[in-house]
Image (tube, rainbow, N blue to C red; front, side):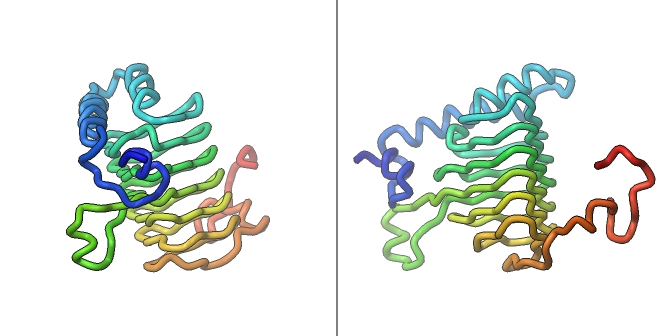
Length: 203
């Protein structure tokens, strides 16, 4: 098993071996082009992000600047939106479902290093997959750490550091991120805290 295969398998690997360094460089070139496109070139923006990522739905919008290591390890579903400064360290797989919205300055980290300095100084690192379900909203300045799974319909408050799995249908917030409460049918009629919708076409 070479070091690229070890990386994909979530095993310790050395990131400068077996073509990985060259793959990162090629992806950086694509990311540079993406981040420097004129804002009116929306068709080219869509074409290029679909070339960068491993899998996407029909509609996708990631606001520049965006950064990732390889691109091909990121899979997103239908109707995916990420705001400015989205960072994905995708040495492990990042799988994201349908109708996911990501606020500015969100980071998804699959990458990590050994705790002991001798092991860390050996050059080995690792990536552990991250999975995010459908209909998830991730607040600004949130960090999602290696190995985390986030269930469907979750809302994560701004500034959270997600170190453990989150079940479906909850609001979670904090550092470390913890479940605040369940999302219920009673939430449907409110757009912000105690403010009710004044229109009828939101359901």
